[in-house]
Image 1: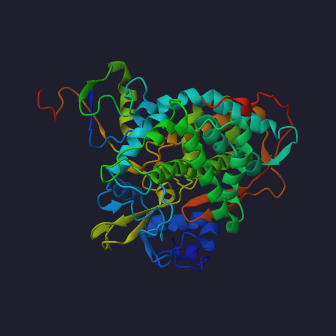
Image 2 (image 1 turned 180 degrees about the horizontal axis):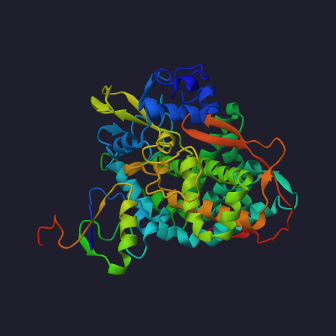
Amino acid sequence: MADTERGQLRRDHFTDFDLDSPEFTENYEDVLRSIVAECPVAHSNVAGGYWVVSRYDDVRACAQDWQTFSSEGGFEPGRGGDSGGAKLYPVELDPPYQTRWRNALGPYFGPRAIRSRADSIRAQVNDLIDGFVEQGRCDFVDEFAAHLPGRVFFASFLGVPLDELPYIQTATDNAMRGPMEGRPEAWAQVAAFLDNYLRMREKEPPRGDFVDVVLAGVEDHDGNPCSWEHKLYVIIDLLAGGIGTTTYLLAGIAHHLATHPEDRARLAEDRTLWPGAVEEFIRYYAAIVALGRTATRETEVAGQKIAEGDFLMLAFAAACRDPKVFDRPHDVDITRKITVNPAFSFGPHRCIGSHVARLEAMLTLEEMLRRLPDLALADGGEPVYSNSTIARNIDTLSVRFTPGPREGGGGTAEPGR
Amino acid sequence: MKYRVDEALCCGHGQCHAVAPDVFDLDDDGFNTAAGRTADVDPALEGAAREGADGCPEQAIQLFAGADPESETP
């Protein structure tokens, strides 16, 4: 960044980067702007040290080259080795084992498959809006954005019975957003719930959903049927990857609509703008800041020597702000033409849920425009952001609107399919 | 216009079908049905084909006029 801008930051983010530093959270845009412009491979001294790759072309090249940049050293710094802890699969696997899982699961999350989910997801959107629409104000994260992705995962995709939804939704919310000291316990609850759920489904006839595929499993690295643990890692990964990320996106959309009435008016008038606007929201509110790779050999990225065994974070959120690819990258332009969205990564690990996220965002946008047409920030309602190593979050977003009627579609009554 | 999908690059993201469903179809595993071969583009859909090919995160889709330059049996 220019010296005048750097003067405002105390930390040297080029040589002493830290995804968890409060200064990064608070000066997010400035730091992203500066590393993309001036330091395509920054270095961090925390968690054993890691590199931060920030430009679109470099992030893409590294993500596509899984032979050189392995995912098996963990998705974030400090998870390497056989620590014995729970893994997330397939995000922490390399091909060909990773490929077998992706090919098995991919069809259930592809653009063709998810079309049939739209009615069920729309019902969930409207049921959540029913919960606060009469009040004229709400915390949009607490009452909507933190809940929709979990409902979609558990009710629409997993077919969890209605009476079990509140328990697992609360546990998931505590694991994602609760007080830090309670998160490990909440994650254990989530894992136990999913373990029980898989065991129950194992005794039932197949339902033709992705749970059948998880239960069937694939061959592991050694060509043996994969273990039960691995199946659990897969279902936890799908949950972990889809919940907090989409929460941030939905909160970001609400924030933008609440603060840009001119964009809201254009979107309300012209629905052909919606797909492009959703894509732009996904770019601007890129939920995954960065994910890790481990160099399998000595190599070079953007002129920087990388030693075998070095850990790298591929900063997708920074690639989304690369001015070589996106003109005025720090502005939201709902008419921007985005060819490939780097927010979802590239290569074998590109987000398996991208089409689901888009659908949730599209239906949320549509129903918000219809039911909360004058959405605005409540007094003092500026969003509170946080970063959690790999992810960016909006923790609170206080909004107000003209109260409207409940519609009583009963989203939670939708049968899981 | 024809297109060719590089089987080694196609990861099954489904982005081509999401952008241009009338040009690119997906098989039951979520991969482009033309992976590993050459297929024709309806002349009326050439614009959509370009958008779908550009939208592939892996740049696995090549468009070309006339014969497939990589085809062994032109």
